[in-house]
Structure formats: structure tokens, C-alpha cells
Image (cartoon, rainbow, N blue to C red; front, side):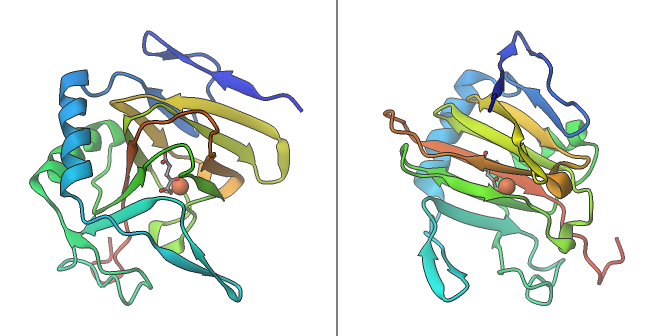
Length: 208
Ligand SMILES: O=C(O)CCC(=O)C(=O)O
Ligand SMILES: [Fe+2]
């Protein structure tokens, strides 16, 4: 089974299927990204989620936090947990990614991978509350980790992108419908990494 790797060279990502993913390695300046990484690690009320898998309770191998507009959206009615309110820093980042994504986001999920043992398993973000072809903007800070994708119907078709400090990955098109993605564990020494995925929850109450 062959695994292709796409490495960003001077802002160019060779061979990347651009209809589902676009990647910009140097989206945010390194000094700004350093500050943001330290700020987010320090000032986020990180939680380790427990999720039910059939009859088992599984502790997710990473920390997370969920921010959004609790006054605008009835998250409860949509089966989502109530988010924290936007911070200045998160709003600043939201404003940076929106013009590139071409949409406005109303929620962001933060993941904190403390070391190489932290990970997110194969999944797709295909919740109906985001519509069938969501655009999700993903900002990464800290340790470079590999973002793997594989076709749901043919696991042999897979690609990997190294998500760098200050990079922006846009997930779009068929990615959530036809592909799964993950951040695998690593046996190598890994420093902390923070990832932010900006999402647009479709609000039935506002008909948007
Ligand atoms: O950490 C990442 O780059 C991806 C996170 C992710 O897939 C998610 O939060 O749904
Ligand atoms: Fe995801």
C-alpha cells in the first residue's frame, strides 16, 4: 500500500487534491504564532472529553475546548454542547481565516495534543448541522503533525500533509463525505500542538 506525502514548498503544495483541501504553510507569522500557541495553552479551560462508543466509555486522547455563539444558536436543540463565548484572540483568528474561506464561521473547536501519544482517530466531520459540504478552516500551532486522509470506500487511497506552525488548511468539497482524516499517534518525541477548526453551524432558527 503506497502512501503519498505532500510537502509544502514555498507555499506550493504539489499534487494536493485542491477541490477538497488547500494548504498554506506560512499563513500566520512565526512570532505571532508563537505568542498564540503560548496564549492558548495557558488561557483555555481545557477538558478531556469522555465519549460513549456503544457500551464503552472512552477518554479522548487529547484535550479540547468548544467556542461559539450561545446567544445566536440553540446548540442544545442541535444536539451540540453549549460553547464558551468567543475570546478576543479567537475572534482575531476567525477574522483572519474568514476572507480566505469565503464564509463566516460561528463556532471553533480547539484541540490540544500534549505529546505524541495524543491523537484523533479516523473520522469525518460530517454532522448534519454543518450541511453536506462544509468548509472548515483549520489553523495549527506548535509541533508539526501529520494530517492523514483516506478515501472511505478505498482505504488504500491515502495522503498525508504536514501541518506546520502557523499554517492554514481549508477542508471543503467532498472531504467530509468521501474521506476520513486523523492525526495519528507518534512514537517520536513530540512537543505540544494546538489545532483550531473553525466551523459554521447552520442555524435552523435563523434560516441561514
Ligand atoms: O488536529 C487536527 O489537525 C484535526 C482535528 C480534527 O480533525 C477535528 O477536530 O475534527
Ligand atoms: Fe476532524
